[in-house]
Image (tube, rainbow, N blue to C red; front, side, top):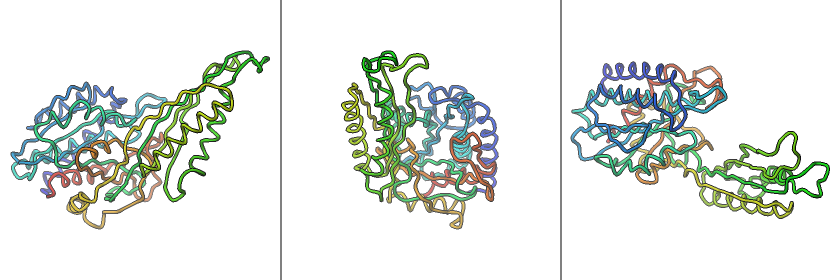
Length: 375
């Protein structure tokens, strides 16, 4: 890759990151971010593809080739007590894709592929990729990509290093909502009430046995309670108690077993405590599984960008990532790019102290560009 053009692209990416960090927006509310992306892209010979969504943007770089490579970045921030904040580094991802556009447009005549740039909204909550596909992303673009690449920062990995992993990298995620309904009443007459809080508390305790007693201990899973909402400080025995949570795994059969046990546990506890119970289980996103067929290309791309000494492999993570949705339609590969400052303890994703090393784009932009041009 041309060093001068890459230096310019990285500098532009860093300018974008600094600005994007000041305008964090929640998923499907990224209006300022989308407007900024579209304004920047006016500088390049790329075609805006309207897929009918209010936020996010899709651009196509026509290099006159017979095949297209897709590149994706997420653009949303994380909801927090202090409003939206970039506590997962998506501002860096957006800036990286804009930097890659700067470089790839500059070398347009020598590109082996056309390039599709996907600025995806609403990755937090794993909704955005589904929305884009539902809107007809791959049907409305001039050419369906033959493969797709995405990146995400990884604070546990030193800045300058790139994780190239074969196989499952991030988990399949299910979302559940369980509502226990009883009979409301006064605390002085418990025999006239059916208290759903007792049932909900029993479910929270019993949930732990799904992992410890129902799942193969050699298969990593998590099954969590995110919220339990019930009652009023001045009214005993409310009518309803609502529990929400996630369950995650790398193996679909295991995932199915967890969903089965969630339902069975919830229903049996309802019967035991004479409550009514409604259960909603949603398969939110599949496992992000980097296919063997793309590993060689992905590795060679990273090697050309940062050198073999900076390619590492680490254990998968039970977080989930909706980039996996693209992989259900076309071959898709996901990189982790180190964002931790070497020698320092770095806060994880979603932590209030989360930060991305200021040199992150120096690695991320070349990697994404290399993925688009490696044959």
